[in-house]
View 1 (cartoon, one colour):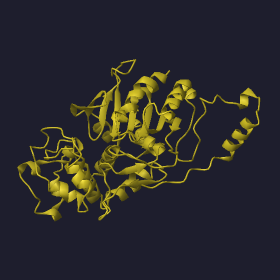
View 2: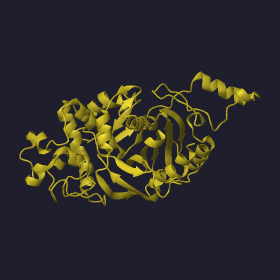
View 3: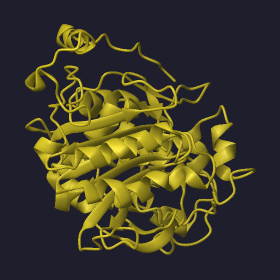
View 4: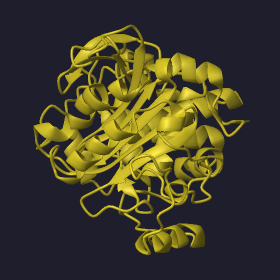
Length: 379
């Protein structure tokens, strides 16, 4: 993990602090403390206030106090963007604006975006057979008609057919992969099959490792270099890191990405805006629409929330028992262990992200307060 230094606040921000300390009595120079914009850091985010973008600032401030007090366990950040502007952020548990955070399986949704860029380049297609990408792995172990039938789309939709389970981490194929210093991609390509691909949904992080290998091979560079050039740098990200295979350096595309929370919020805004960031098309709009379309109905719940699955994205609904409004509309979700989240709410032109370090049932607390606190703040 890479930690970046905390930024220096601008002279204007320091001057405002000095004026406040000196007790300036002018109401026009003393903004409402719960409705001030986040600090502009030159990282591509336009900033605004909650009120200016149609959000109840006091309600968000009250949520922030509860986050800081530990009411939801160890939440390290919560950020909200509306109408394309960063309007609110809260850091807690010692976190800072410039510090990169583990994303865990949110990394999978970022890998989906990389696949979409490859599709847009014309080098990748969902119907391509997986085994065909690895002629140098011949003879592939356990190669039968089922494995030969596995397509890229099966990796994207978690319907690989591999004999793989992560229900319990201890002793699982995922633990074996994480602790291996060998070729992660080959390990999964060689893994035995259980059934025909496309038959049943099963959460297979290893399949996303293979997808990362495929993306790199199709683009003629390793997937982390491709991600930097085609996604992270165009999104004006201020640093990024990967958990890597200690022997080969290969990045863990299934759960190893580290980003600043502000840069994680950009990923959500990119999806909300159909693959565009600050006017630049980075991911094809057709891929955003296709990858966030429901493919598998209710494979599991995330905490107390029923979700469907697309192509490495979860799909929730505004018609959720915890949402007081219980209205129609989608919530596009990326989720990672410990409480890493992106929530994209097209109906309200809103994105929320949260990061955390909760290893108990509070890992899904942010999904709860999206409905109980953030969406009710929309005016």
